[in-house]
Length: 266
Image (cartoon, rainbow, N blue to C red; front, side, top):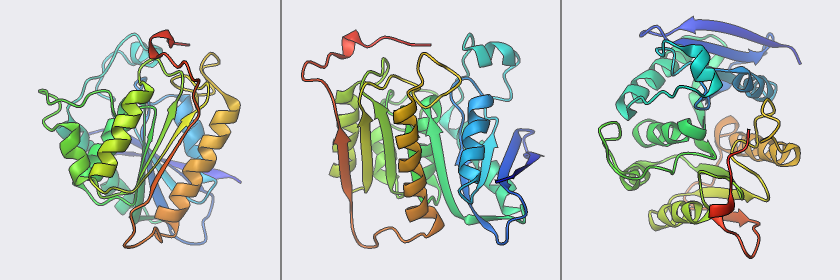
């Protein structure tokens, strides 16, 4: 399938690239795909094209566009540390872009956060209407308030209305299995619908095919099936399960799992 792209500039000057099937016969449900800590790089574009081929208008904002040294950001030598309110404003601008795009139906909207931006999809799902909130190996490292995070994660989860899909890795060096279980428990305590899966022998960043040391082909393909199915149920068809709360937790780990033995891979 041929994929078209358009590049917009939001109100604040942030670049937003849209990906969608060439000459769609009807308006398309939307997905906002957030990049990893490295900014807007090839991996994000690859994922956007894959999702667009499933019949979505996919928006990829360059959230860290304001960083002066983009080369250092892309290489992981610099890190952006925006505040939650700043990110919420930028994501509102992305929705405004989608609202003005003829091929997009912005009333059907899912959001995917990856690594650092996993928190951002949860923040948005707590503050704005969202049909699906997806997080890949992120979003749960910082639960406390700070200058950049004016709300505790518990308070964010209190307000989260969208069904949640969280995909994590067994040998992630930055997110432990107990931390994922803590997230699961917090969602259940609040009566939130979720599906969480921990992938066997998967490190942090296992979806990123541009990083050979981290990439796990089988886990990546399985994860895409999870994401596509979740979006189809909650965004494309918007059927969900009205009046029901669904809890699904799937994990496969070693009996002698030891988070301290997990190491960063490139």
